[in-house]
Length: 423
Image (cartoon, rainbow, N blue to C red; front, side, top):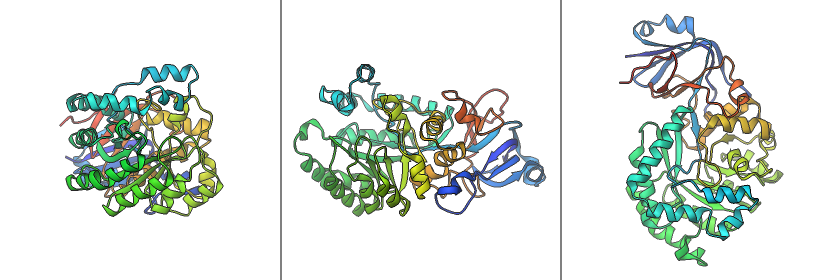
C-alpha cells in the first residue's frame, strides 16, 4: 500500500545537484512548508506542498501519516561508528575524569586493546545481542543508515567475527555499511612489529574479506602511537588494489599528514581532523574526500580542540558529521546530540549541521545515490521531529525529539499519535 506523510510544518528535502554539498550550499535545506511525501514500494514517488501531493491519484489510496506541526527530514546517516565493540570501558572513563590522557590510559592496558581483549573473548551471539540493542537506540534517535567498523579483534578470527556480526545485522532494521579497521592498533602478538602486521593484513586478510564480501571500506588509524603515514600508504594502496573504498582516521590527537594521505589516495573520507592546518583544509576542499567531523569524542575525553568546521566550510570542503560511537572515546549513538555539539562547539549553523548529518554523510559512504535526501526515486528514509522548526533539534541538546523513524517506507519507531503499519 502507498504511504503518504502529509502536513509537515517543515519538510527538509536536501534536494540539489548530485554530490555532497559545500560552502553556501550547505545552508540550503530545500525546505517545503506544509510538505508531503508520497511513498510506494519503499521509494519516494512524489514530494512537495501537501495540497498538491494529496491530490495525486496514488495518494487517494495511501495510508496516511500525519506530520502536522512537525519537522520531517531525511534519516540521519551516521558515517563513522564502531558498532561491534564489546562492553563499556568504565575504568577508562574514571581515569579520564581523574585527568588521565588517552595515551596514559593505553599505557596501563586500557584503551583500544582493552576492547580487543573483550571482543576476542565474546561469542558472536553476545556481540550480536549488544549490537542489536545499540541499533534499536540508533533508530529511536533517527538514524537510518550506519557505517559499522571492525577493529576490536585485530586478529583474523576476531575481525572476521565482528564483520560477520555486521553482515548478519544488515537491514535488521537499518542499512549497515561494513568497514574493515584492522589497522586500528598494533595487536599484542605483533608488538614492536607494526610493519609485519601491515604486511600480514595486506597479504592474508584483505583478499579473504574481498572474496567473502565482508567489507566495503578499509580504514586505518594514523596518529601518534598508531600507524605512520608510510604504513598507511602501503595499507591503503593494497586495499585500493583489491577494490575497497578507503577511509582514514586522521589528525585526531596530532597533525601527522594523514589528511593529506587521505586526499592523495582518493579516500571517501578523512575522519576526526581536530589538528588540521590551512593547507589540509585547502587540500580537502580541492578533493572528493569528505571531511567527517566527530565532536562526540572531543566532548567525552574532556578536550578543548574541536575540529575547525568553519575553516573547512569556508575553504569549500564537503563536511559530514558522525557519532564515532565506541566504548572508549564516544559512547553515544545520538546524532541529535552531535548536531548540538557541532553548533555550540564548532559554530556550524543548524542548517549546515543537518546537511552534514544527512546528504554529506551519505556521500561519505558512497550511498548518496539512494539515501541522505528526500528526492523522487530515493529510498523513503525519513525522520519526524516533534518540533515546528528544524533549528530546535540542536537547540534542545541531549533531548530525543524523534517521534517517527522510517526506513524504506516502513516505520521502525513511532510514538504518540504517529500511526504506522507494523507489517
